[in-house]
Length: 191
Image (cartoon, rainbow, N blue to C red; front, side, top):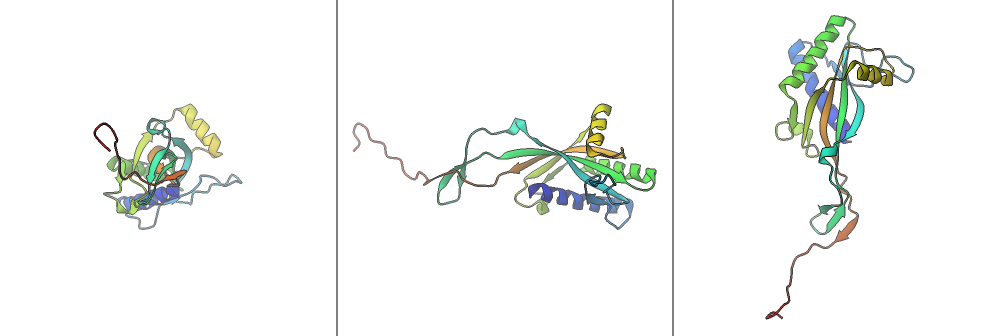
């Protein structure tokens, strides 16, 4: 659910930005796969499609072992958070090639002006998403060839960003225990 929520948030923010920059009042951004199963283009005409092309675990922030979960009554041990990065491909599908190039430029400008979205500044992220950080990716020609081959489409004007870092935590507990409220120490001179 967090993946969908973060992409819907991004779609809304990018639509608002493109309306301001282009003067066009219609939405121009859509969450969409690039192609359908039959190979036809899926991104709507005159739109920038946001496509999830990979999910990666954030290895540097990986926590090992059980984590404390506190529901106010009992203390528990649960599995650690999963921190993930999403690779998002922004593809411009406009009938005029120059419009596609303009749309890709506007996507780049959008992320140049705001590459971090925090819950403090953007309350519509909600309490389940602390922040989203966007990094421009520059794949080699060989990597681009693999990406477009995997997608099953011909290359179109596009840009790739890594969105980090979503934290997945279901809040389920494995082992329940009552919280420690008092410690008694017995020793010499104590009873």
